[in-house]
Length: 219
Image (cartoon, rainbow, N blue to C red; front, side, top):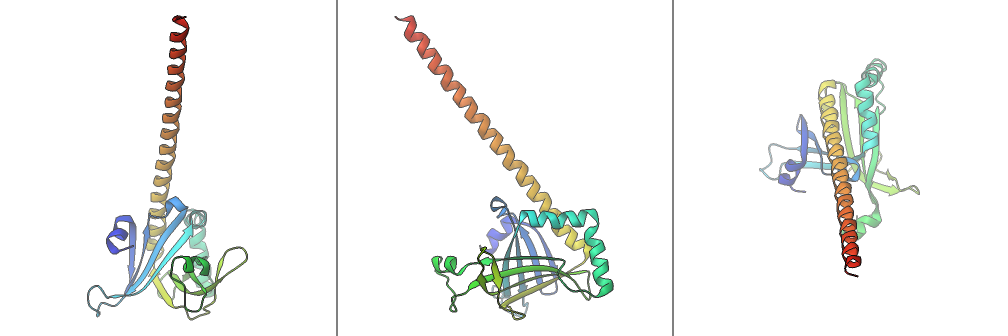
């Protein structure tokens, strides 16, 4: 996806120092929320400034559960407790990626033959409320199909976006609003298609009935 296409699907973007995260609406049909993380170097020539780029796809049920915690106040309570205890374990974490078989089929197999793991996690920050962190690197597919990371603390790509409670809330809630609007429109289109099919079927039955009546009237 090029920059023009990404802007077309962009819901919102949150910037931090030399990095950003943006949410996109192009994966709702797959029941995924698409987040793109990137870092950049303003000292590089225009068109070559991006230094890391990680695409994260979060299942909508996981994403909506995180939104629930935000909206009911649970997330703020967890944040305050973690800050008090200096606990940097993930408040939220989602694992994803692309299997080695799929990479091979796409002609993008890794030299080491491994899968690509992509992870996102939400932790408390030292200088801000949160860090929304995306990492990618080698991974292995488990028996359940999950791509488990195998890069330890040395990912090939790393983006950590510093966020306040308010900016995280804006990212989550605006993305949720767009997803719910898309879901409503999807149901509406399904109902319209169903009614269209019913109407078409009824017209065909009426046509058959009329033809039958005309046939018997000529007997």
